[in-house]
Amino acid sequence: MVRRAPRIDPADLDRALYAAALDDLVGAAIVLDANLRIRVATPAAAELLGAEVPIGASAATLLCGDRPKRPFAEALAAGLSFQALIPHPAGNADDRDQVRVRSVPITVPDRDPPAGWVVYLAMVGSGDGEPVRFHGMWTRDARMKETFRIIEKVAGEDVTVLVRGETGSGKELVAHALHALSPRSGGPFRAINCAALPANLLESELFGHIKGAFTGAVKDTPGHVQLADGGTLFLDEVAELPLELQAKLLRMLETRAVLPVGGREAIPVDVRIVSATHRALRAEVEAGRFRADLMYRLRVIPVRLPPLRERPTDVLLLTDKLIEELNARGRRQITSVAPAAAAALERHEWPGNVRELRNVLAYAFAIGDGPVLERHDLPAEVAELAPAAAEVVVSAPAMAADDDISPELRRIRDALVRTSGNRERAAKLLGWSRVTLWRRMRTLGLE
Ligand SMILES: Nc1ncnc2c1ncn2[C@@H]1O[C@H](COP(=O)(O)OP(=O)(O)OP(=O)(O)O)[C@@H](O)[C@H]1O
Ligand SMILES: [Mg+2]
Image (cartoon, rainbow, N blue to C red):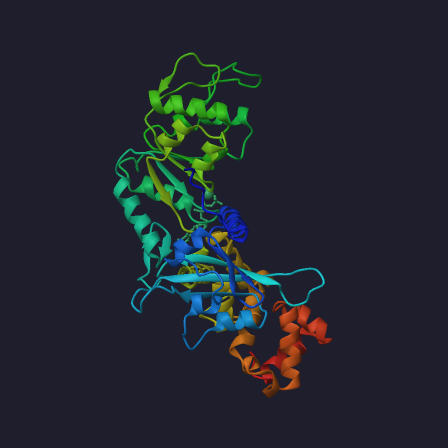
């Protein structure tokens, strides 16, 4: 007898396909319909939440349980995009893992309220640990501390280390720390950015050239590899190394000798390689852009630096430390950060990580005056994030039932809802200046 395969409901199949596609694109996410019921959940979302995500269930119950304060659920119900940290739904009181939730409305042409929502989920470290300083890097985050521990452990060996992290997350500081903590610290530290030069120049910069190798090669010139002899060579953006140079680098690592451009004889070198990339090297290998054998050589010890948005309590810690640094320059002395400014800093996503935070604070120092860092000292993209306004509305009496709020409050709320919390556009909609909106919000207890 032939066994028939079990029939799959086409709707389930569709759901599984969308979930897989979404998972591939963004990782942990759930899709809600207009009634805030879960329609699709990615496998990564289930993994993050530690349980199957019940399709059809209420998102608020899933994410917020029956806690009395549910600003996230309230914001969704009010049609606002929102970003917040919530306790991990499956965690208990002393298990401090948090989840960062960010909701983005799905709009459909000619339909005003959102047709649904995508809710992005990300795990965030506990973040209430002691601040530590390690070679110029400050953190409270448990994963960062683990990274520091690994660096300390492996610095003394000659193993190659591959640092992975987004731009501005501290990869170069890690490379310096590895050098400083190694027996090579008395030797040279050379850094080269593999993304910054075209292949032929990069080859000569890395491996050197001999006199007459090409037009303009008037004398034998050592490359970075040779100049790092006895020390550490830091290969920044190593994933951008062209394939032919990957082969040459691999040969150098295998033979511990470097062949300059135009040279016949390899010169023995003793270098320790630290490399860094913002890409997943494995994916580059799969795409045929990076040699697998070189990847295995370079990432004997992989080190990952979490981006700033995954370690939210580091934002204010770093803010304090960077303010101390900027105070020392003497133009302005900041002694405190206004709560609204702190909230804006914490809410920002920091795509440029610590470097971006440093730049934002330098901007605030230059723009504002006085001892308090105010929210309006911050650049607009940090100060005026939509979720900030959303939170104001949510935590205010405006969330009360529609009939017992004043008409003015309702007008303001509706304007903010329609502009996803953008105060500038909300003011325009109301025909007010931004200052007027701000003043009336304050009078109504919204600020
Ligand atoms: N944990 C930290 N504590 C204090 N400062 C930090 C920390 N991480 C990074 N910085 C500072 O942030 C800036 C960027 O760091 P770094 O240059 O090491 O980043 P990167 O990952 O190499 O960036 P890119 O990929 O753009 O080269 C530097 O000014 C550095 O001093
Ligand atoms: Mg760098």
